[in-house]
Each structure stands twice: as structure tokens, then as C-alpha cells.
Length: 222
Image 1 (tube, rainbow, N blue to C red):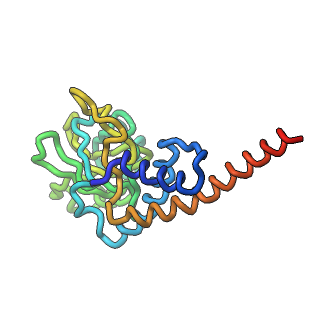
Image 2: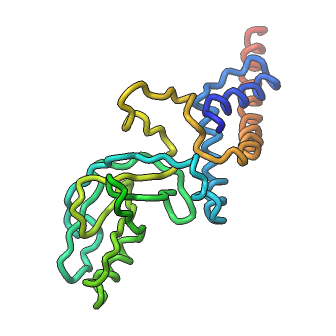
Image 3: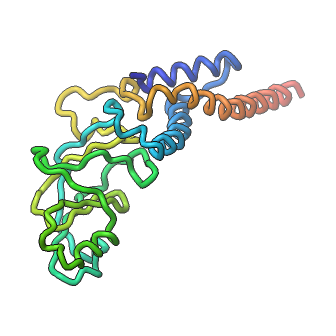
């Protein structure tokens, strides 16, 4: 699978083919690639082509949960008793899909139980239904960079998602992988399309650099 270092090297090669003195950082190049990739991945997710790609997903283990009120969980409309937990810290940025962050699975630490995604407003309706006491499904929802969980007593969960940012600093217990050696956060088959879109962006950047350099040279001559 393509790494961040691979794609930035290819993009830098395209720049040098046009302008030898153009200085653009790897970070900037990957930010352009990721910007376009997120749009393309959202389109692919709408066609149900993303969640089957195992190589794109990475599990963040043992994400700590804390107890919160039903008001903090946006569930004030629930009539009966209900308890809530939420991820203690905001979860890292994920690639967004058609219906929100592309999270493929949320489970207990031992993977014995998986949670069903929903929204707080839908859960309020579920909790207020007459047969809710027979409902054994475990739910979660995403809001403002946190996951929320009703009626559970777990202290932590695992989250499997396509992470926009590196999560190595959160989970590595030995030697961490260098950022440039990490895999890109989108499928390889989108690589050519992403590169073409970045090339169009870079055309404007390179032209701007050229205009600035030409102006500097003109000022030196006067």
C-alpha cells in the first residue's frame, strides 16, 4: 500500500519537472492530497465501496469513557431512567463519509460486544418506546468529536476507523512509525485522480512562485 512518503515524492517529482527552484514542503503536498482524497472517499462511501477495505482501517484501543448526564448526551427528552457514558477525550480526526465519520466498528475491549451506530434524537425515540425494556442492543453515536453510549458500564472501548491524523502516538508502546512511512488514508485506486487534482492546485502555486521570483529579479535590475 502507498505511503505518505511515496505520494509526496511523486508530487515533488511533478513540481521539479515544471520548475526546478520551487520549494514546497512534504506537509503541504500531503495536505493537498488529503483535501481532495476526502472528497473522493466521501463519494466512494456513498457507493458502499469503502468499509470493505480492511487496509484503510486502524483500531484505536482502550479509549477511556466517563459518566455524563442525559443533558450532556443530548437526551433530555428521555422519560425513563437512563445512564450515559462518553469518550473522555475527543477522538482523533477521521475521514468523513456520507453519514458522518467513517467508523467501521466500536466494541468492548475484548471484542465480545459491538455497538450499533445511531443518533441521539433517534435513541430518544427508541428509549421512549413501549418495548424498550426488551431491547438488548448496545448503541453509540458521534457528536462533536466524542462518542456517546447509553446504558453501559464499560470503562473503555475500541474504535476502528479511517483516521485522518496519525494515531501512533496514542497507541505505540515501542518504536513508533515515522509519519512518512504510514499508509495514506485513502484507496490506492484513487491515487491517480488525487494526483491530477493536486497537479491542478500546484499549477497555480508554481505560477505564483514564478511571478514572485520574476518580480524580485525585475527589482534587482532597476
